[in-house]
Image (cartoon, rainbow, N blue to C red; front, side):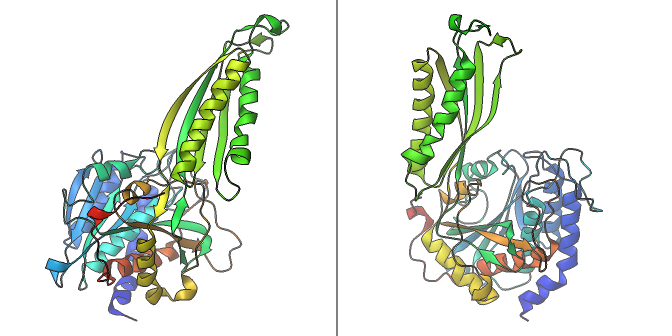
Amino acid sequence: MSALEKVILADREYIADIRHDLHAHPELGYAERRTNGVVRRELAIVGVEHVDGLAGGTGVLAYLPASTKPDSALTIALRADMDALPITENTGKPYASQSLGVMHACGHDGHTSILIGTARALSKVERPNNILLVFQPAEEGGAGGRKMCEEGVLNGAVLGKPVDRIFGLHGFPLLGVGQIATRKGALLASADGFEITIRGKGGHAAMPHFGIDPIVVASHIVVALQTIASRNVSPLDAIVVTVGRIDAGTAHNIIPDEAHLIGTLRALHKATRELGEKRITQIATDIAHALGAEARIEWLHGYPVTWNDGEATDDFRRAVEPAFGEALVAEEVEPVMGAEDFSFYGERVPACFYWLGLLSKGMDRYPNLHATDFDFNDAALPVGIKAMCSLALADYAHLKTSSGEFAARG
């Protein structure tokens, strides 16, 4: 066992206790004030320099300079998200959420605890690279990652030096504890929201010929939107158009004036994302016009594709395979249509996002992310710390280009 592994093992219960505390006190995006305090306290204990008050007030950026050859050292960033979800917990755990209607249903308590454990471990060893630790608020729909980027956490404006590589992880219920996995290119989809307001002409349900029924128009639009995936996009590509909500009407015998559709668009490539937006707009407006109504569309542009840079992903494998063995580093996994605001970092510097297994041996299934019975697996904490430390301490001497020359893809 290496000296680093001994440090990680010695901290195992300590980090689990931190996670349980964070789990019991979840906070929604941009309100992670108590979580922020825990992060700052733990960084101060091991003497890690940090800056507070980022991205709306709760973001934290910490810096560990290289201890060997600091003048020529590269800068590696590691990121964790801190926010919880507006869900009522149903785990029955002794450390279950004490905040009604808020819980860590996506494992950000685990992510934050892993990065705290990484800071503790790295503070005790020689470091060939500069390390930036990014504790980010509001991943769950709040685009905290974009705010962190806009405030300069990657370019050296806040603390440390400009970033050459950034890595982030997410607990994954479909992989076993001890396993990690990723892929080059798209790992998670872009996510945009749309709202369609259909204006018709209300009237009596028994006399539809005197009106323009917006519910009928909405029904045609919902069905037609499904042709985007089946007829506008290659079968080898992926796009999802889902209408998740329809609002219209007040009574069974009244045709309303308006109907409202709310939905989401997901895609794995920038061009497909743009095509999807164009076709949704065309289909909604043209069908409404053909049926005598009008359609107005509002777009809520969300997260871009989480795109893993090819060279950064190669670096990831070179760093973690010696620590874990090839058998535990899965071959390229299939992308998923969920979204992540780690994508904003990947638009600015070479990035790699990866999955961390949560399924314990002997379990048939693990509760899914965003489920009321989800809880991050403590057994995965030292695995995540080991992976992050491996990335922080890896040899990146082969790098010949700076982050300033990077052009995002996807």
